[in-house]
Length: 196
Image (cartoon, rainbow, N blue to C red):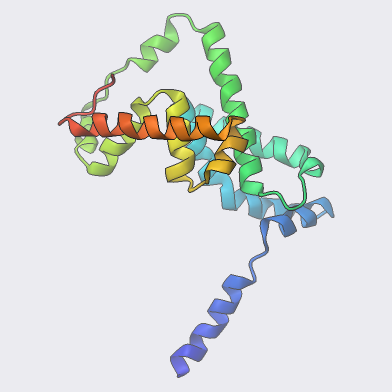
């Protein structure tokens, strides 16, 4: 019985964490530390989405920072009742798309060389691990499939949220997800993960 009583304050504290919407309202009322809590909650997930989309650590960090900066500046446009996570992912994804478009426009010889770089011995050793093989397979997917897989499986987003974040019809999201899973199955079926 005393063990249950000892657990009660901890359980109560967990339920007292403010909801995202409340943190948005507090921020709008002049409490910037509330927005810092939102950044702490979603920074890692936004970074991972950016990294999976861009394949570049520095650019992913920049996009995450840019996304939160844009969100903070336009917080007054956030619709009450909407999910903050969906909103911040949409901002981050569009920032990634902008960077990918700039890459395509300004790519010369540098970017293809970086994209075709072979992994070093350390990366090859890590690739033997099952989780590393999966990450490598996801990285080998075309960008549109990689993004859907990242949002659905790694971020736990539902079809509706993904459609909203990517600004795609629901049917397209489902098709992309199905094709992404098929690609992953093929990539993981072989002894080594290779790009198709």
